[in-house]
Each structure stands twice: as C-alpha cells, then as structure tokens.
Length: 289
Image (cartoon, rainbow, N blue to C red; front, side):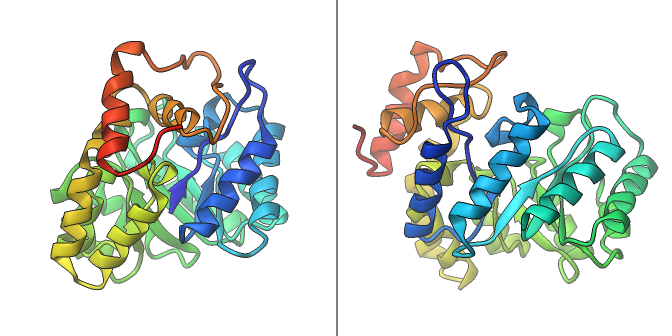
C-alpha cells in the first residue's frame, strides 16, 4: 500500500494532474491500495478543503481499480470524526487515523478517541501509531482493547521495533490486519511477526519492487523477499535522510514524475543528500531522468 505524495508546484499549489498520473502509475505497477493524504501526503499543511479534494481526486482517478484509504486523523476527536465522515461520503474504502499529535493523550484518551470515531462513522478504520512524529505511543494493550470494535480493522505500526510488531501479532494478529509503517522492517515483519503488508514511502519510487517483495514474503518465499529487500535497503534509508516527504518528493522530481514543490515549513532536500538518494535509486535499478 503506497502512502502517496501530494504533488505540488513550486509555489505550493497542489498539482492535481500530476496526482492523477501517480495514481495511474501505481495501478499499472501493481500497488494493492493507495493511502491519500497521510503524513507523506503533507496532510499537516493542506487546508481541510484541499485535504478532502485530494481524497476525492484519488478516489475518482482510481475508479475502483484499487482501494483508496483516506488519511483522516487529527488531534481533535471532533475534527477526526468530521474528516472521516466526509471521506466516507466521498467514497473512500477505509480511513487511516493517526494518533492525536502534540496534545499527548493518555492510553484511556486514545481508546475513547478511536472508539468515538468508530461509533460515529460506519467505515472500516485503520489505527496508525507513529510515536516518532506524534509524541504519542499507543501501547499494545490499548490496541487490543480497540480490536474489539467491529469497524476497526487494522493497524499501521511505525514504532520502528520488530519486537513491538511481534508483540502486537501475538495480541491482535487474529483480529486486525497488521501493516508495517516502517519500510526497513516490512519484510521481516511479514516473515517473522505475522504482519500482512506495508503502508510504504519507498513504494512511491519503487512500486513494483515493493509489491514483489511483499508478495514473496506473504507466500513464505523468504529468500526471494530478503533479496529484494536488500536491493531496496539503500532507498529505505535514503528516503528518511531528512523529514518525510522531503527526500521522496525530490526523488520523484528527479524521476520526472512530479514538479519540485512542497510547503513550508518543509524545504527542498539539502544538496548534501542528493548523491546518496541518487545512489539508492541506482541500487534499485530505477532510471533517473
């Protein structure tokens, strides 16, 4: 599952034509589903109407060829409910809800937040834990409580811990679709922790290889999966040399797929990292324009 970027012009305006082309690329290369307006889609700096328009545009362009998962998390429960309901009306297949950021809720607060959204909006919902960005860590015990709620169907776990992933699989692997949010752990999480896939940044630039790696891992072809993962390892690293999505947008620009644009406070990739990203693309046999 790709966490798709939101293409922007140099002035920060959303480039919807480039977004259409990216959706087509992912369909053609076998990506199983698309997350619109997640962290990689710069949700934090889009207005509410832009956020919803990107979701609508991805849904329209995908045209049921692949499922579309809408990023609708917020640090206010009422806002998350509103975004999730509007995504449901727009035709999203599911929603991805990041833990509330900055306000640092308790575990009980997290439980009540997600329960309120699930009870308010009848759409499949995927929890998203990424403590490195939100300053909030949803613990496995809280995930286990939330797994009892029928329309909470999955978890994107991005705590960068294989041990955490294994713990989650033991607790809720029979009730939730567990998805890695860390590209560098995705292969091992499927092979050794019972995960079912990945919501990927790397898939923006290497969709076919990520699809092949995950398919191999899911069918138990460990040697094939790890071989592809080793090929992708430089990309997994290089795409986080600066805050996501700075490096991946620079890479997509070099590939001729999107214009060079992001919104402040994000800035273009520092020149000192250009060579490393290019080397990672070459290691994955991705031709640079």
